[in-house]
Image 1 (cartoon, rainbow, N blue to C red):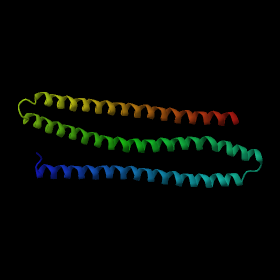
Image 2: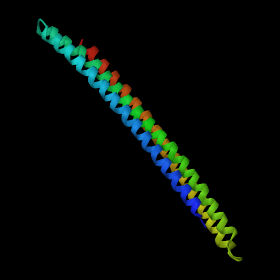
Image 3: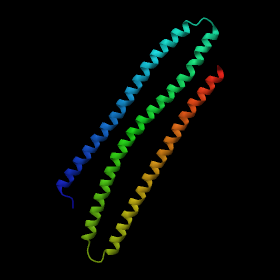
Image 4: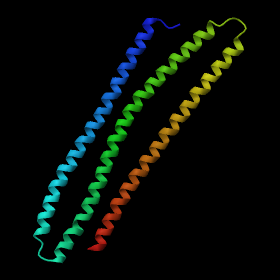
Length: 181
């Protein structure tokens, strides 16, 4: 049986984990807000510069050249923004996942300890039931590990696809801009 001290310690550990996760989430939000402020500030300055250049254009060809020169940097900046956004999200997710995996591991160990204690204290003649319980717990742990590995692999594939898509979009924009010139 669990003692009052064990229950209090578990609640205390859970609160510490909750506050740790909350801090990690706020750090991610702070990074996102900082990124958005930087993008907005630089975008405003660039828009002002572009507006001045557009207003000083002498003819339609110069205006078209200004527009063509704006396309590639805008696409590259959008791709860079997407990469930064993805890095913030994946970094925050990795930190939260690390904490969660640690807590899951601790919970599994505690649960196994409770199961082992229950099996040791089980009445004589229940060895088959105890073996069945141990087998079920081991199978559940294996299934959880398999799901965790599959989720990690899916995340890695998604990240690789995102990076490739981002890179291809920038290359396509550069090629289209060169073709226009």
